[in-house]
Image (cartoon, rainbow, N blue to C red; front, side, top):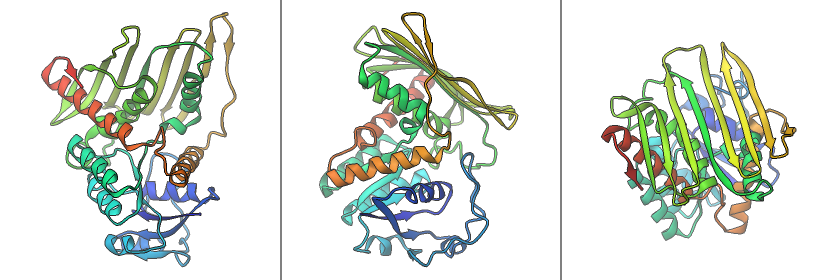
Length: 349
Protein backbone atom coordinates (compact mmCIF):
# COMPACT_ATOMS: atom_id res chain seq x y z
CA UNK A 1 0.00 0.00 0.00
CA UNK A 2 1.34 3.42 -1.02
CA UNK A 3 0.60 6.13 1.55
CA UNK A 4 0.05 9.59 0.07
CA UNK A 5 0.13 13.09 1.51
CA UNK A 6 -1.77 15.62 -0.60
CA UNK A 7 -0.51 19.22 -0.65
CA UNK A 8 -3.33 21.56 -1.63
CA UNK A 9 -7.09 21.14 -1.28
CA UNK A 10 -8.25 22.93 -4.41
CA UNK A 11 -9.84 21.69 -7.60
CA UNK A 12 -7.04 19.26 -8.45
CA UNK A 13 -6.79 18.14 -4.83
CA UNK A 14 -10.51 17.31 -5.02
CA UNK A 15 -10.17 15.43 -8.33
CA UNK A 16 -7.15 13.50 -7.05
CA UNK A 17 -9.08 12.62 -3.90
CA UNK A 18 -11.87 11.13 -6.02
CA UNK A 19 -9.29 9.13 -7.97
CA UNK A 20 -7.55 7.71 -4.90
CA UNK A 21 -10.89 6.50 -3.59
CA UNK A 22 -10.97 4.08 -6.55
CA UNK A 23 -7.36 2.87 -6.32
CA UNK A 24 -6.86 -0.12 -4.03
CA UNK A 25 -3.06 0.08 -3.91
CA UNK A 26 -2.80 3.67 -2.66
CA UNK A 27 -4.51 5.74 -0.01
CA UNK A 28 -4.40 9.31 1.23
CA UNK A 29 -3.17 9.51 4.81
CA UNK A 30 -2.59 13.27 5.12
CA UNK A 31 -3.58 16.65 3.73
CA UNK A 32 -1.76 19.98 3.89
CA UNK A 33 -3.70 23.19 3.28
CA UNK A 34 -3.45 26.75 4.59
CA UNK A 35 -7.18 27.46 4.24
CA UNK A 36 -8.42 26.41 7.67
CA UNK A 37 -12.00 25.88 6.49
CA UNK A 38 -10.93 23.43 3.81
CA UNK A 39 -8.54 21.71 6.21
CA UNK A 40 -11.53 21.25 8.54
CA UNK A 41 -13.60 19.67 5.73
CA UNK A 42 -15.49 22.57 4.13
CA UNK A 43 -14.67 22.05 0.44
CA UNK A 44 -17.81 23.74 -0.88
CA UNK A 45 -15.93 26.72 -2.37
CA UNK A 46 -13.78 24.59 -4.71
CA UNK A 47 -14.34 25.54 -8.36
CA UNK A 48 -13.32 23.72 -11.53
CA UNK A 49 -14.18 23.36 -15.21
CA UNK A 50 -14.94 19.63 -15.46
CA UNK A 51 -15.91 16.64 -13.38
CA UNK A 52 -18.27 16.46 -10.42
CA UNK A 53 -19.05 19.62 -8.46
CA UNK A 54 -17.38 20.31 -5.13
CA UNK A 55 -18.94 18.49 -2.17
CA UNK A 56 -21.67 20.50 -0.47
CA UNK A 57 -21.57 18.38 2.68
CA UNK A 58 -18.56 18.56 5.05
CA UNK A 59 -15.76 16.11 4.24
CA UNK A 60 -14.84 13.87 7.17
CA UNK A 61 -11.18 14.69 7.82
CA UNK A 62 -10.85 12.49 10.90
CA UNK A 63 -9.15 9.59 9.03
CA UNK A 64 -6.32 11.87 7.94
CA UNK A 65 -3.43 13.72 9.50
CA UNK A 66 -3.98 17.39 8.68
CA UNK A 67 -1.35 20.11 8.43
CA UNK A 68 -1.20 23.81 7.68
CA UNK A 69 2.60 23.57 7.65
CA UNK A 70 4.17 21.75 4.69
CA UNK A 71 7.42 20.96 6.51
CA UNK A 72 5.48 19.22 9.27
CA UNK A 73 3.68 17.02 6.76
CA UNK A 74 7.03 16.12 5.19
CA UNK A 75 8.23 14.98 8.62
CA UNK A 76 5.46 12.36 8.77
CA UNK A 77 7.29 9.01 8.38
CA UNK A 78 4.12 7.23 7.20
CA UNK A 79 4.00 9.19 3.92
CA UNK A 80 5.59 7.51 0.88
CA UNK A 81 4.48 9.95 -1.82
CA UNK A 82 3.71 13.66 -1.72
CA UNK A 83 1.02 14.58 -4.25
CA UNK A 84 1.45 18.28 -5.08
CA UNK A 85 -1.80 19.95 -6.15
CA UNK A 86 -0.65 23.54 -5.62
CA UNK A 87 -0.48 26.45 -8.10
CA UNK A 88 2.27 26.05 -10.73
CA UNK A 89 4.59 28.67 -9.24
CA UNK A 90 4.87 26.56 -6.07
CA UNK A 91 5.76 23.29 -7.82
CA UNK A 92 9.57 23.54 -7.95
CA UNK A 93 10.31 24.45 -4.33
CA UNK A 94 7.66 22.15 -2.89
CA UNK A 95 8.77 19.21 -5.01
CA UNK A 96 12.43 19.74 -4.13
CA UNK A 97 11.62 19.96 -0.42
CA UNK A 98 9.71 16.68 -0.56
CA UNK A 99 12.48 14.92 -2.48
CA UNK A 100 15.05 16.15 0.02
CA UNK A 101 12.81 14.82 2.80
CA UNK A 102 13.04 11.35 1.25
CA UNK A 103 9.57 11.26 -0.34
CA UNK A 104 8.61 10.31 -3.86
CA UNK A 105 6.80 13.18 -5.59
CA UNK A 106 3.74 13.15 -7.82
CA UNK A 107 3.33 16.75 -9.01
CA UNK A 108 0.52 18.23 -11.07
CA UNK A 109 1.35 19.72 -14.45
CA UNK A 110 2.87 22.01 -15.56
CA UNK A 111 6.08 20.76 -13.98
CA UNK A 112 7.28 24.37 -13.54
CA UNK A 113 7.08 27.75 -15.24
CA UNK A 114 10.71 27.90 -16.38
CA UNK A 115 13.17 25.44 -17.85
CA UNK A 116 15.65 26.38 -15.14
CA UNK A 117 13.22 25.26 -12.43
CA UNK A 118 12.55 21.96 -14.20
CA UNK A 119 16.29 21.33 -14.26
CA UNK A 120 16.52 22.01 -10.51
CA UNK A 121 13.71 19.53 -9.92
CA UNK A 122 15.29 16.80 -12.05
CA UNK A 123 18.63 17.31 -10.30
CA UNK A 124 16.98 17.05 -6.88
CA UNK A 125 15.31 13.77 -7.89
CA UNK A 126 18.61 12.35 -9.10
CA UNK A 127 20.37 13.36 -5.87
CA UNK A 128 17.63 12.02 -3.61
CA UNK A 129 17.22 8.70 -5.41
CA UNK A 130 13.44 9.22 -5.28
CA UNK A 131 11.00 9.37 -8.16
CA UNK A 132 9.67 12.66 -9.49
CA UNK A 133 6.52 12.01 -11.52
CA UNK A 134 4.51 14.74 -13.26
CA UNK A 135 0.74 14.49 -13.60
CA UNK A 136 0.24 14.83 -17.35
CA UNK A 137 -3.16 13.19 -17.46
CA UNK A 138 -4.00 13.68 -21.16
CA UNK A 139 -2.55 10.31 -22.31
CA UNK A 140 -4.91 8.58 -19.87
CA UNK A 141 -8.10 10.06 -21.34
CA UNK A 142 -9.58 7.29 -23.49
CA UNK A 143 -9.44 9.24 -26.77
CA UNK A 144 -5.76 10.01 -26.33
CA UNK A 145 -4.96 6.64 -24.78
CA UNK A 146 -6.45 4.93 -27.84
CA UNK A 147 -4.23 6.96 -30.17
CA UNK A 148 -1.14 6.40 -28.03
CA UNK A 149 -1.69 2.65 -27.94
CA UNK A 150 -2.36 2.57 -31.68
CA UNK A 151 0.96 4.32 -32.32
CA UNK A 152 2.94 2.21 -29.84
CA UNK A 153 1.30 -1.02 -31.00
CA UNK A 154 2.28 -0.38 -34.61
CA UNK A 155 -0.80 -1.99 -36.12
CA UNK A 156 -1.26 0.95 -38.51
CA UNK A 157 2.34 1.21 -39.59
CA UNK A 158 4.73 4.12 -39.41
CA UNK A 159 3.72 7.36 -37.72
CA UNK A 160 3.63 10.18 -40.29
CA UNK A 161 2.47 13.20 -38.30
CA UNK A 162 -0.56 14.90 -36.88
CA UNK A 163 -2.48 18.08 -36.14
CA UNK A 164 -3.46 18.97 -32.56
CA UNK A 165 -5.87 21.60 -31.25
CA UNK A 166 -6.59 22.92 -27.75
CA UNK A 167 -8.44 26.24 -27.45
CA UNK A 168 -10.50 27.79 -24.66
CA UNK A 169 -12.47 30.98 -24.09
CA UNK A 170 -10.63 33.63 -22.10
CA UNK A 171 -10.67 32.46 -18.42
CA UNK A 172 -11.64 35.86 -17.05
CA UNK A 173 -12.23 34.46 -13.55
CA UNK A 174 -8.49 33.69 -13.17
CA UNK A 175 -6.74 36.99 -12.38
CA UNK A 176 -3.22 35.53 -12.56
CA UNK A 177 -3.71 33.56 -15.77
CA UNK A 178 -1.50 35.78 -17.93
CA UNK A 179 1.23 36.32 -15.35
CA UNK A 180 4.36 34.41 -16.40
CA UNK A 181 5.51 34.08 -12.80
CA UNK A 182 2.17 32.67 -11.58
CA UNK A 183 0.42 30.55 -14.25
CA UNK A 184 2.13 31.20 -17.57
CA UNK A 185 -0.93 31.74 -19.75
CA UNK A 186 -2.27 29.34 -22.38
CA UNK A 187 1.18 28.07 -23.36
CA UNK A 188 1.99 26.52 -19.97
CA UNK A 189 -1.51 25.93 -18.65
CA UNK A 190 -3.18 24.65 -21.81
CA UNK A 191 -0.88 23.81 -24.71
CA UNK A 192 1.62 22.05 -22.43
CA UNK A 193 -0.77 19.06 -22.59
CA UNK A 194 -0.22 18.75 -26.34
CA UNK A 195 3.49 19.62 -26.13
CA UNK A 196 3.88 16.67 -23.76
CA UNK A 197 1.72 14.40 -25.94
CA UNK A 198 3.62 15.35 -29.10
CA UNK A 199 6.90 14.65 -27.30
CA UNK A 200 5.47 11.29 -26.16
CA UNK A 201 4.36 10.23 -29.64
CA UNK A 202 7.05 11.68 -31.90
CA UNK A 203 10.10 12.16 -29.70
CA UNK A 204 11.89 15.47 -29.22
CA UNK A 205 11.62 17.97 -32.08
CA UNK A 206 14.75 19.60 -33.41
CA UNK A 207 13.10 23.00 -33.84
CA UNK A 208 9.79 24.87 -33.73
CA UNK A 209 8.34 27.69 -35.79
CA UNK A 210 5.42 29.48 -34.14
CA UNK A 211 3.27 32.43 -35.10
CA UNK A 212 0.88 33.98 -32.64
CA UNK A 213 -0.46 36.85 -30.61
CA UNK A 214 1.13 37.88 -27.33
CA UNK A 215 -0.65 39.26 -24.28
CA UNK A 216 2.09 40.96 -22.35
CA UNK A 217 4.87 38.44 -21.77
CA UNK A 218 2.86 35.30 -22.58
CA UNK A 219 1.47 33.85 -25.80
CA UNK A 220 -2.30 34.30 -26.15
CA UNK A 221 -3.05 32.34 -29.36
CA UNK A 222 -0.60 30.53 -31.63
CA UNK A 223 0.11 28.02 -34.38
CA UNK A 224 3.25 25.89 -34.38
CA UNK A 225 5.10 23.72 -36.89
CA UNK A 226 7.38 21.14 -35.27
CA UNK A 227 10.51 20.03 -37.13
CA UNK A 228 11.92 16.54 -36.53
CA UNK A 229 15.03 14.72 -37.70
CA UNK A 230 12.70 12.48 -39.70
CA UNK A 231 11.62 14.81 -42.52
CA UNK A 232 8.54 12.65 -43.20
CA UNK A 233 7.01 13.73 -39.87
CA UNK A 234 4.60 16.63 -40.36
CA UNK A 235 3.34 17.85 -36.98
CA UNK A 236 1.42 21.02 -36.17
CA UNK A 237 -0.58 22.40 -33.24
CA UNK A 238 -2.88 25.31 -32.51
CA UNK A 239 -3.69 26.52 -29.02
CA UNK A 240 -4.67 29.54 -26.96
CA UNK A 241 -7.71 31.60 -26.00
CA UNK A 242 -10.46 33.33 -27.93
CA UNK A 243 -12.29 36.38 -26.61
CA UNK A 244 -15.82 35.03 -27.07
CA UNK A 245 -17.28 32.92 -24.28
CA UNK A 246 -19.60 30.84 -26.48
CA UNK A 247 -17.06 28.05 -27.00
CA UNK A 248 -15.52 27.42 -23.60
CA UNK A 249 -13.26 24.57 -24.69
CA UNK A 250 -12.21 22.47 -27.65
CA UNK A 251 -9.59 19.80 -28.10
CA UNK A 252 -9.01 17.71 -31.18
CA UNK A 253 -6.49 15.71 -33.17
CA UNK A 254 -5.89 14.23 -36.61
CA UNK A 255 -3.06 11.71 -36.47
CA UNK A 256 -1.61 10.26 -39.67
CA UNK A 257 -0.14 6.77 -39.93
CA UNK A 258 0.78 4.67 -42.97
CA UNK A 259 -2.35 2.53 -42.78
CA UNK A 260 -4.85 4.77 -40.96
CA UNK A 261 -5.82 8.28 -39.98
CA UNK A 262 -7.16 8.83 -36.45
CA UNK A 263 -9.71 11.60 -35.86
CA UNK A 264 -11.21 13.17 -32.72
CA UNK A 265 -12.89 16.49 -31.86
CA UNK A 266 -14.77 17.53 -28.72
CA UNK A 267 -16.02 21.01 -27.75
CA UNK A 268 -18.12 22.77 -25.15
CA UNK A 269 -20.38 25.20 -27.03
CA UNK A 270 -23.04 27.29 -25.33
CA UNK A 271 -22.42 25.38 -22.12
CA UNK A 272 -23.12 22.02 -23.76
CA UNK A 273 -20.53 19.35 -24.47
CA UNK A 274 -20.56 18.31 -28.12
CA UNK A 275 -18.71 15.29 -29.48
CA UNK A 276 -18.09 16.76 -32.93
CA UNK A 277 -16.07 13.73 -34.10
CA UNK A 278 -15.86 10.62 -31.91
CA UNK A 279 -12.59 8.73 -32.09
CA UNK A 280 -12.65 7.48 -35.67
CA UNK A 281 -10.22 5.29 -37.59
CA UNK A 282 -10.05 5.80 -41.36
CA UNK A 283 -8.42 2.60 -42.63
CA UNK A 284 -6.46 2.07 -45.83
CA UNK A 285 -9.12 -0.36 -47.13
CA UNK A 286 -11.53 2.64 -47.11
CA UNK A 287 -13.45 1.28 -44.13
CA UNK A 288 -14.29 3.46 -41.12
CA UNK A 289 -14.15 2.23 -37.53
CA UNK A 290 -15.54 4.01 -34.45
CA UNK A 291 -14.13 2.12 -31.44
CA UNK A 292 -15.96 1.89 -28.14
CA UNK A 293 -14.09 3.73 -25.40
CA UNK A 294 -14.53 4.39 -21.68
CA UNK A 295 -17.44 5.57 -19.57
CA UNK A 296 -16.96 9.25 -20.36
CA UNK A 297 -16.32 10.09 -16.71
CA UNK A 298 -13.22 12.35 -16.67
CA UNK A 299 -12.27 11.10 -13.21
CA UNK A 300 -11.51 7.71 -14.79
CA UNK A 301 -8.47 9.23 -16.49
CA UNK A 302 -7.13 10.39 -13.14
CA UNK A 303 -7.73 6.93 -11.67
CA UNK A 304 -5.61 5.46 -14.48
CA UNK A 305 -2.98 8.14 -13.93
CA UNK A 306 -2.76 7.40 -10.19
CA UNK A 307 -2.53 3.67 -10.94
CA UNK A 308 0.40 4.41 -13.26
CA UNK A 309 2.06 6.46 -10.51
CA UNK A 310 1.64 3.57 -8.07
CA UNK A 311 3.14 1.08 -10.55
CA UNK A 312 6.13 3.35 -10.97
CA UNK A 313 6.68 3.78 -7.23
CA UNK A 314 6.24 0.07 -6.51
CA UNK A 315 8.70 -0.89 -9.23
CA UNK A 316 11.13 1.94 -8.50
CA UNK A 317 11.26 2.71 -12.22
CA UNK A 318 10.24 6.00 -13.86
CA UNK A 319 6.96 5.88 -15.73
CA UNK A 320 7.30 6.17 -19.54
CA UNK A 321 4.40 8.65 -19.46
CA UNK A 322 4.76 10.48 -16.13
CA UNK A 323 8.57 10.67 -16.06
CA UNK A 324 10.02 14.06 -15.15
CA UNK A 325 12.41 14.21 -18.14
CA UNK A 326 9.46 14.03 -20.54
CA UNK A 327 7.65 16.78 -18.61
CA UNK A 328 10.81 18.89 -18.59
CA UNK A 329 11.05 18.52 -22.38
CA UNK A 330 7.46 19.75 -22.71
CA UNK A 331 8.40 22.95 -20.87
CA UNK A 332 11.46 23.36 -23.12
CA UNK A 333 9.21 23.02 -26.18
CA UNK A 334 6.78 25.60 -24.82
CA UNK A 335 9.59 28.03 -24.03
CA UNK A 336 10.98 27.72 -27.56
CA UNK A 337 7.50 28.27 -29.03
CA UNK A 338 7.14 31.53 -27.11
CA UNK A 339 10.62 32.60 -28.20
CA UNK A 340 9.69 31.83 -31.82
CA UNK A 341 6.60 34.02 -31.60
CA UNK A 342 8.60 36.86 -30.07
CA UNK A 343 11.48 36.62 -32.56
CA UNK A 344 9.47 35.85 -35.65
CA UNK A 345 11.80 33.01 -36.54
CA UNK A 346 12.53 29.33 -35.99
CA UNK A 347 13.89 28.26 -32.61
CA UNK A 348 16.06 25.18 -32.18
CA UNK A 349 15.84 22.97 -29.13
